[in-house]
Amino acid sequence: MAVSFKEVTKRFADGTTALDRLDLDFELGEFVVLLGPSGSGKTTACRLLAGLETPTSGRIEIDGKDVTHVPPRFRGIGMVFQNYALYSHKSVFENIAYPLRIRKVVGGEIKRQVQAIADLLRIGDYLHRKPAQLSGGQAQRVAVARALVWEPAIFLMDEPLSNLDALLRLHMRTELNRLHRKLDKTFVFVTHDQEEAMTLATRIAVLKDGRLAQFDEPKAIYRRPANRFVAEFMGRPAMNTLDGKVEGGVFRAGTLAIAVDCPDGPVTLGIRPEQIEFADPTADDAIRLVVDVKEPIEPDTLLIFQTSGAAPVTLRTQRNCDAIEAGQPVAIRFPKDVLHYFDASTGQRLR
Image (tube, rainbow, N blue to C red; front, side, top):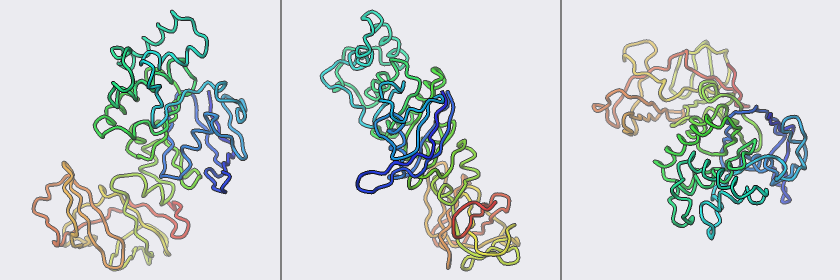
């Protein structure tokens, strides 16, 4: 069940372009996460795949068949919305059974299938309850059960965890991972939370302004971002990016001077906060900066340095920093082998 977006553009009546010539292909059994900030087009892409919206141009294919104008009920797709959209007057059993009833499944089979999916999602004891009697996590599982009970080929989720507290979100991420492995279905998950994307996805499609910025495995996106936007969007805290110029193998930004392996000229230098190292103050590659802010986030510590003529620099470490305080100079180094280089004008990766 391969899914393909072919040059898909979606333009709304007010002139807003939600998707701009999106090309995206993924295969059966993948857990694909559509990731991006608000307005990036991720929910629009999900709704187009479900058939709830129609593209302005381009086409959508499922298993080689053009489904661009096929009604939602004939696409073999189940969907969970951000607000769950449960029927408040129906029991949990009837909420889950509804897709089977409209498909004219016989009564005994309905009971069997509802019980099976409820047991899988660990809500079998709540089938008699109404949605108002459920916790947020239980309601989320009911919505997932309703979408899965009729065994759709593709399962879409539009920010289904955003209404849950932090601990419950972590628990539900684990549950969704387990569910994906057990069912071996194609999952498409929409979120703006890069931590959710990194933990759930087999591949992540990062969207920006309706365009695909990068599509790759989570590890590849984090370690080798295709452009400055992806580099800064992925990671907490974000990658440090410094605008400057290389002259004779030395990158200069304000008073910063860093040895690099990059041709001369304007460039944006990037480095992850956890890859900045403490240095011997007497070493040739040591950079002395003054700590502006210290943020203990156990077991890590963030040290934020102000620089003269360049952007602030954030270091993340698990080293004991009890003796370091704001206003104190610290020697750090930027190892050459972990540096990223982006075109100063386009933001695209150089190497």
